[in-house]
Image 1: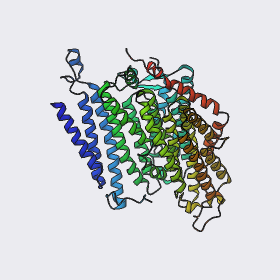
Image 2: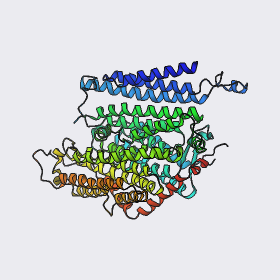
Image 3: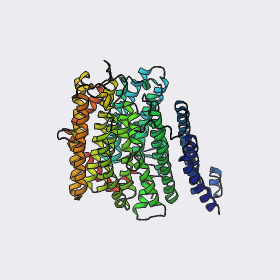
Image 4: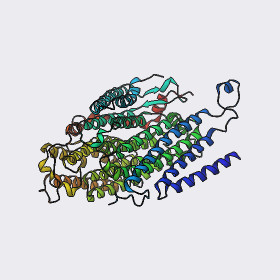
Length: 114
Length: 499
C-alpha cells in the first residue's frame, strides 16, 4: 500500500515539476526545478527506507533488530544540499535578470537569439 | 587495499588551492599565482599517477580507509588517468591565461576559486569509482562553470548561464534518477560491484532503463544532438579562459561517462547504445560543420566546431571495436589541446579590440595591427583542427579513420572526410578574414595591449609535440587503455570487493 502511495506521489510531483519547469515565467520554472528535486529525493527514500522497522542506530543494530538502509539517508542529505545550491543559484540568476531585463518572461529574454 | 596518495593528491590539491585563494581574496595577483601553483602541483601528481598506472596497473584509494563497497573509492585506470592528465594539463593553460587577462570579471575574488573548483569537479568525475560521487562532482563542475559564465564581461553571459543551468539541471535529475534506479536494483553504488553483477548476465527490471537515463545525462553534458542547443550560446559568452575549458575538457566528461557506460557497466546493451551513438555522432558532425561555416562570430564558429568534433569521437565509440576506440580516445585527447588553444587565440584577438568582440563583421582585417605571431599560431591551430599531416589533428583523424576502415562503415567514413574538408574551409576562411583581408569600414578600433599569448603558445607547442615525437607514446597509451577497457575484470578486480 505504502509502495503504491509513494509511486503515485512521486509521479504526481514529477508531473507538476516538469510542467512548472516548462512555464514561461522563470520564477515558476525555478520552483518547478525544486519540486522535481523533491520528487527524486522521495524516489530515493522509497527505494530503501522501508526495508526494516527501526532507525539505523548502532544500538538497534547491536540488539539485532531489522534496521532500515542508512545509506539512503546519507544520499538524500547530499542530494538536498546539491539541489539547494543549484536552486539558490537559479534564483540568484532570475533576480539579476529581472533587474537587467525588467521582466521574468522567458520569451522576452531572447537577446541571444540570432 | 593499497592506498595511492597521488590519486588523492590530484583531486585534493585544486580544492586546497581554491580555499587558499579565497583566503587571499584581497589580492588578485596573489590569487592567480595560487591558482597556477595549484594547477601545476595537481599536474605533477597526475603525471606521477599516470606513470604508476602505466607501470603497475589500476590504482585505488579508499577515502577515509572505509573499504569498498561501503566506502567511497577513487579508482584510476588508464582511461581515468589519461583523461585526468588531459584535464590537469589544459587547466594549467587556462590558469596561466588568467594571469595576463584584462577582462573585468577576473577582478572578482571568487573567480580563481571557482575555476579551481571546476577542476576539482572534472578530475573527481573522472577518477571516482562511485556513481553517487560522480553525480556530486559533475554538479560541482556545472555550478562552478555556470557561475563563471554568469559573471562574464559579455552582457549575454547571464542569459546563457540561466539557459544552461535549467537544461543541465534537467540532465542532472535524470542522472540522479538513473543512479537511484541502479541503487534500487543492485543495492550498491560502487561501479565495480554493479559491473560485477551485470557481467553475470543478470538483468534486473530497472537496469536497462537506468542505462538510457545515464546515457542521456552524459549526452547532455557533451552537447550532442538532440541536447545541443544551449552549447554555442554558453561557450561563446563565457570569459575566454572559461570558454576554452568548456569547449575542450568539460564536454569530455560526457565522453568519459559514455565510455565507462559501454565498456564497464552495460556491456551487453552496448551494441544497441553504440548504434544510437554513431547516428547521433553523424548528425553532430554534419550539423556542427555546417553551423560553423555559416555563423557570424569567430568564437561561435569554434563552439559549433566542438559539436562536430564530439561527433567524430562518438562515431568512434559507436563503431565499438578496439581500433575505433583507440581512435576515439586519441581524438578526444588531441581535440582538447587544439580547441582550447584556438579559443584562447580567438580571445586574444577579441581582447585587442575596444569592444572585445569576435564578430566577423567587426574583426575583419583587424589582424594587420596584431602581433604577427598570433596569425601564425592561429593558422597552425586551424590546420591542426582540420587534420593536416604534420600536426596532431592528423594523428587523431588517421587513428579514427583506421578504425572505420577496419569496421567497413564506408558511408559514415565518407561523411567524416567531407566534414574534414568543411573544417579546412571554415578555419582557413576565418583566418583569412581576420589576418589577410583589408580592414573593412565596419572594423572596430584596436588597442595597443591585449591578453598575453603565453598560454595559447604553450598549448600550440604541445599540439606540435603531440603531432610529432609524442604521437607514438600517445597512441600506445591509447591502445593500452583500450586493451584494459576490453576486459572489465581488470577494473573490477582492482577494487577490492568482498566475495
